[in-house]
Length: 463
Image 1 (cartoon, one colour):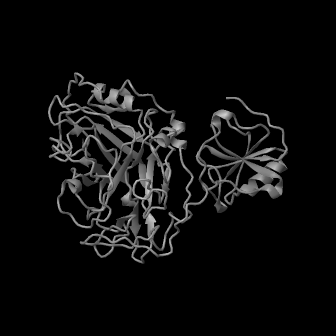
Image 2 (cartoon, helix red, strand yellow):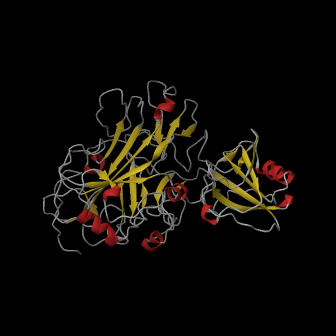
Image 3 (spheres, one colour):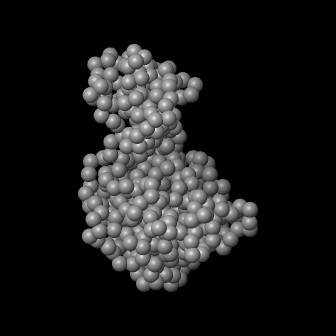
């Protein structure tokens, strides 16, 4: 452990709408721009198995069904911006769904990614704050809860109903009962008091405790070591479903079948360079929250962050209108605790990673990979579009133009050329369904699904 530094605390005058109490403390706000995975995976609660409900994961691409600190640190990219942080965050372990009156479900669109707050909250002005140690992990909340009993754990989970044309509304501990015109923000504050010895515990919570003020105050004697405080927030576009309310009830629920919101929870697996995190805890004392103002951090390029992802390995539908929630998750409103359900026929198989290519070997072509594109410097010069575009159509068109490379983009566009994409552009994320066949992938926004004629000589463009 590092000796106590001299830290000057700064008065925060406008500390986040999302933080519970105004307090004297510095902080930084870590943007996680997009999920790296949306599937039933949870190496805390269900290591090595398909998890019970759907999770949306942020952070390093070392994330796996079973993982440890070394696997997290072996990540080659992250959907969060700081290079020295390869942690994984379940900022909304339960993806939100909307339930229609006919009993079907569809995902609610997430607004952006997630914001992860690192808050320098102390019980006393001289209390030492520590970085999370290597191998540390924790969970906040209880997915089985369906009623509110005002425990510290439940008080740490809140919902903010956003409507910028009205005065700020009071936050609630369950899902709000009115429409949120500018989004519904889900928030979880993690315990910051550690027992000083266990990196994890059987329930992933007992090695940690909340201070007496939940998000501030003094630690109990059983958990005397104070970590930097961790707080997540994510926003969903619930206004898209303002016409689906029925029987004067809000239509939203969490992916574990919880229509109350009391079963919301969050998870954290540490993947930080611990020495750098401790430097930041000790020395990043600005009250602006701007992560770039911390001099100890380096940052991933924006393309790297947006393109970081892990192909899913659980073969089940999670988008569109679904007859039931992924996994075995019947709607359970309580007020008693929910009961785990099994035997509904949901898959329990961890399969190979999903592929995003189409087999066009019958045409003598093969998949190369996903490439970024640039409006000012196109990867391929020849372009066409088709409202019913498929990979096969694009390949056939490029053959007709005498080209050896084909690339689909924006679902309905096709590009052709005779030189390979620059190596620096490869490795992007292509996941947009083709306009003419939703089972095929046709690139993305300035992302090309690239195919090459077999045997064609490779000539590579430079950037």
